[in-house]
Image 1 (tube, rainbow, N blue to C red):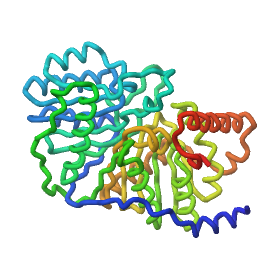
Image 2 (cartoon, rainbow, N blue to C red; image 1 turned 90 degrees about the vertical axis):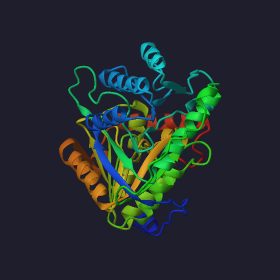
Image 3 (cartoon, rainbow, N blue to C red; image 1 turned 45 degrees about the horizontal axis):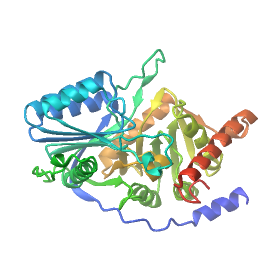
Image 4 (cartoon, rainbow, N blue to C red; image 1 turned 120 degrees about the vertical axis):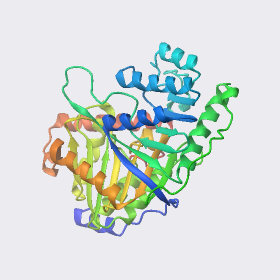
Length: 408
């Protein structure tokens, strides 16, 4: 099929109607940049906590940031705050015994999500990890984003820029939904691990009064009722885009519908910009992503690779009015397996602030990929890309996730 015929077909393609995404007004949303910004605000809220702290994370590293967060949680527990820390059994499997002992002695509660890791097991559920980064303090303020508990700066002599990431600080009516999500997962994990005394439902009074003017929606991904909520929120916004779509996502290997929606948007004249990982982080996924470069570029999309350091952002801005930050990458792990959480915001001020920062990273720290570059690459590059892409397909086939059309 010719390029002109392909573009014509894409212009008339319509995304199947996704699940309706519900938004509510009355929120105060603050964008936080990287760990340096995020941890200063999070630690200040933990120090002010008087009743309850929920904290969920995938990685919890034994570094200076990890030590500061453990110390703050320990101090909160000692003054009578109910501290509920849930970390992933794989991502945080090296959480030090000393820290566990300190938290237990202070009266804090710690749970590992799916701690039984058997690499050779054929049980597919072992791949379902707790990847979301969510914190709720006193039922008053919440944090959602992509920032794990670890320092921004890569160890060793790499001299890379601090890890590129975002989080939102949130106040307002959505605290009810966010608190319920954290409490529900905490109680489920506690019951599964026979910690029945920890499984009581939280009764903390929530502060849900309108705090600002932002209209927002909170979405999670799990393996029960919310398998596709985050993806549907993206698809709804992409379908309504009229001028510009900017996606900054560290691990980008979305499914058929998502890719087709982006190409259709570009075909109808929307500027579609992708900011992707330039440093090799996860080898297989890094190179498999490049299998779609040619098709994206021929559709008129722009691709930039972030080069200054390791990119961990999972963010997007559409038409300068809609924005999202969260834990969900646009890859099979996040879209099909992991527990994730994203905040979607309709607010021109928040969206423009996020857009300006992404554009700054594009201008200063990224390299644009051209169709000519992709077309003229050598056989070794093509072999690497398609070899990794094939390996991802094999892994998805063996695990049974994704369905027949995900990577078509």
